[in-house]
Image (tube, rainbow, N blue to C red; front, side, top):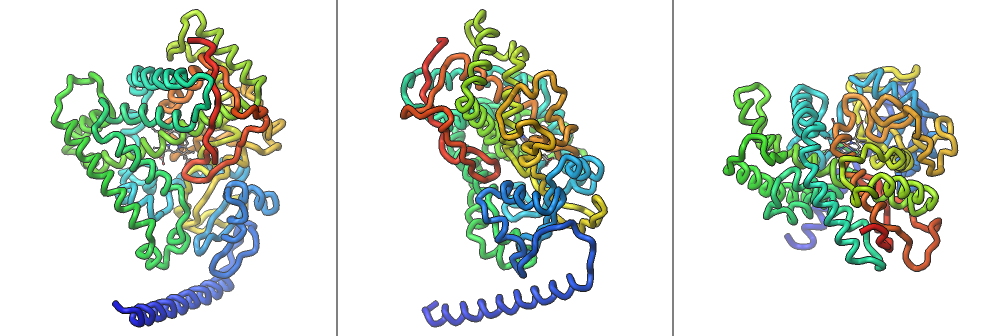
Length: 503
Ligand code: HEM
C-alpha cells in the first residue's frame, strides 16, 4: 500500500472511531441520567476516561485507592474507562464481599491476556465460578498442594536452598544480588516439583514464563473499554502474548508427552505432571475429564502464582530485617539457638521458629504481595451497606490499605513482628483486617506450598550469614521503593554483603 492510501484509510478509520466514541459518550450520558441507582460514593468522573486520571496520579494503584478512600469511604465507586469498579477498604466491607456475599462476588473478570494465558479461562486463577473450575480447584487442593504432597518435595527444597547458601558463601564479603539468587532458587523448586528431573526445556520455560507473568501484571486499554472490540485486535501486547503462549504450549506438551512415555513406580518420585496424568487416566470416562490443555493451564498457574509471590515475600522480609537491626538480631538469635545443636538448618525443626513466623506474618501485613488481591466481578445486582452494586462491577479489595489501617493496628506503619506473638490473628481468611491470601471461595490454595518455600530459605540465610548494606550505607537508608505488576515487589534489586557466621 502506498503512502496516500495509508493516509486516507487512517483518516477514515480515525473519523469512524471518533464518531463511534461520541455516540458511546452520548448514550452513556443519557442512560446515566435516566437510571439513578444509589451507587457507593466516589470521585467526580470525566466523560469517557472516568476516573483513570485520578488513579494514574501515583504509579501504585493501591496507594491512589487508599488516598481516595480516605475521602470517599471504605466502599468506593469508580469508573475506569467504561468499566465500573468498587474498591473495598475496610475489614467490614471485605467481610461482606468475601464472606457474607462471597457467592455473588466469586467470578473473575474477563481480561485480554488472562484469557489467553488460561486456555480460554479453563485454569484455576481466571475462570468464573462454575462446575469445571470447582473440579480443577478440588484437584489442586487435594492432589497438588496438600500438606502430604508438599512434604514429598522436601528434598528438592533442601537441595535448592543449600545451593543458594553455597553460592552466597562463595561470594563472602562481596556484594550479592539477592533478588537474582532468590528468584532463581524459587523457580528451581517449583520447576523440579512440577517436572521432576531437570527438563531440557527448563531454562527456556522459566524465561518465557517470567515474561508472561510480567505482562499479566500490566493494565491494558482494551480491558478498560471492552465494548470497543477493535482495541483488542489492535493490541500489540496481545500479539506478543499469543506468541509467548504458543511457545510455552509446545514446551509443556512436550514435557507431558515425555512423562507419559516413562513408567514410574506408583507414588515414587511423583511430580505434579505425573500426578495430573494419573488423575487424567483415572477419570477418562468422567464428565469432567482432565484435558491436556487443563493440565498445561494448571502447571502455568503454579508458576504464575507460586514463584514470584514467594520470592518477593522473601525479599521484603530480608529488606525489613536489614532496616530493623534489633528484629534481625532477635530472629537470628532464635534460629541459631534452635539449630546450633544440629549445626545446620532443616525442615524438621522449623515449627520451633515462632518468632521467624511472626517476622513473615508482619512482612505480609506491610507488604501483602498481591495488594489488591485478584480482581473479582459481581454476578448479579446486589446491595452492600445500603448501596447498589450493579451486575458485572469489578471489585478490588485493598488488602494493603487494610493491613496498614491504624483503626486495626497499633503503630500501623512500623515493622513489629511481636504484635503476632500470642495473638490468634492469622492469614487463613477469617480475620478480615489481615488478608494477604484473600478469603472465601477464591482464597489462595497455595499457603501450604508457599510456607516452607519461604521459611526454609529465610532460616538458612539468617543462620549462616550476617548481612549489611553495600557502600557503608546505614540500615535505615535501605531503598524500599515498590514496583507494580502481578505482584508488588522491590523496584530495585536487593544487594547485600554477607559475612559467614556458621559454616
Ligand atoms: C507468599 C505467597 C503467596 C501469596 C501472598 C498469595 C496470594 C494470593 C492471593 C491474594 C490470591 C487471590 C485470592 C482472592 O482472590 O481472594 C491468590 C490466589 C491463588 N493462589 Fe496464591 N499466593 C501465594 C502463593 C501461592 C502458591 C505457592 C501457589 C501454588 C503453587 C498459589 C496458587 C494460587 C492459586 C491457584 C490462586 C487462584 C485461586 C482461585 O482463583 O480460586 N499461591 N494467591
